Image 1 (tube, helix red, strand yellow):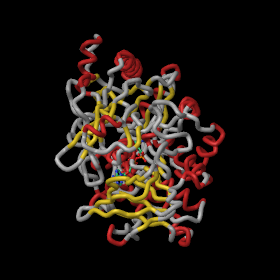
Image 2 (cartoon, rainbow, N blue to C red):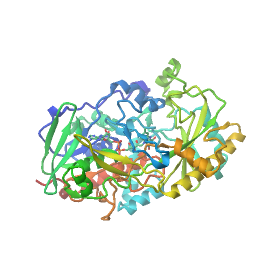
Image 3 (spheres, rainbow, N blue to C red):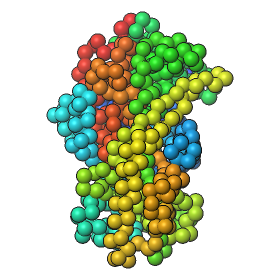
Length: 526
Ligand SMILES: Cc1cc2nc3c(=O)[nH]c(=O)nc-3n(C[C@H](O)[C@H](O)[C@H](O)COP(=O)(O)OP(=O)(O)OC[C@H]3O[C@@H](n4cnc5c(N)ncnc54)[C@H](O)[C@@H]3O)c2cc1C
């Protein structure tokens, strides 16, 4: 199969005018990585109708960049990106950071870097501690692997090839490999494709699926049970009733889901009243426990031609179209690894991470380092604007002193790797932060100036047993609202060790199994 022969199809959305006044079945709010995967699994496991309500529509103008892995950075800030801005970060020299979030079916999977890092034992243990069953997680993990069927890279830049060959001779420094990619035949694959595949395989199953293009404004709750949704598009707002037996699952992501809960009166009563809304369900942990991976790029000079400097050449395009390989099949963050106890992860790019893709002339390699399990936690604060309530993001990076100290160690680890790589002629001089910055104070100043989000927010509606910090129970139900569940990155009690999609895919498969066999009590009662 050649890339140009696949995946140009899309799921057609129903407009707000055309949906029935009352929905029944499973209603999934947000068709992102988890939402589409869950919809697929519920469709094939039960005979109920499944609805997806997704805010992002078709963005045809980006369709080629979406398919070509090397172009993913060009999607940031595009119509596929529902870009958010954090509040200024004290430990990042007062910088506010842009947090991209994908919109449209497939969610952030439409714009992400397509890296697949299998969860580690610690990731499973964390969810087991939160009340999930380990054996069932293993089964769900197998299912996630089957569905994603990730592939080995079809292209590795000379820079990554040299670097991997050298580091693999030094296992004492860590474990490095080319990342498996969420691709098919060298092009981006998203969970939307599962729905397209089922349509082709079994139209009778797919006929139970309806995708609505609208933003979910509010959940309307009466006497502890959901009774309707308020949906909005650019032209109108509509209230859609939910019939008895319906189940609503929030899959709007780590920023979208707590936002919807707060707008609907679910959360910290004091914060909700402060913005002029009526508190309905007392769940103070909504919007708290916000975590993210912060990456510090350490940039080195290279004696190689610059990677993809400018628009792709006809030759690159032809190669990719014919074989799914060549530089356009690079996902930029082509390889990486962990130190021996997985305290740090390193992402390698054949570019100057701080300037690419805007300034591409100079040749560089970046070794970006992040703490796998930062302890700092942020929160989301409801703020009233003229006609709406928005959640401000307080990311609070490195507010825990231990995170600062460890990230300094992380830069030290990168420099040890670089010493070996420089001796072998794989890397040149360190350009950022530069070896002249070697004492802690100057290195921290460089981190404050250059560190970036690695795009992994999570934790804002964390799953757990009946403890103070939990917003969602281990059966995925939101306490105090019959018929409401959550399945997305907001559930993660802690950051994932590596990139989160693989663990989230496992979580969505696990949730599908639990929700499709759960009792009628988990649904709406009228
Ligand atoms: C630029 C970038 C690069 C990344 N790279 C990687 C990577 O290489 N590997 C990896 O493992 N992870 C990566 N990630 C992280 C990964 O993509 C996310 O963790 C994952 O997509 C989260 O899944 P989710 O289902 O929780 O949310 P999402 O996939 O973000 O889906 C949420 C969906 O909800 C919709 N929505 C939100 N609000 C509303 C509303 N009010 N009404 C209706 N719909 C709504 C959104 O439009 C979106 O479609 C990256 C993320 C980004 C942004």
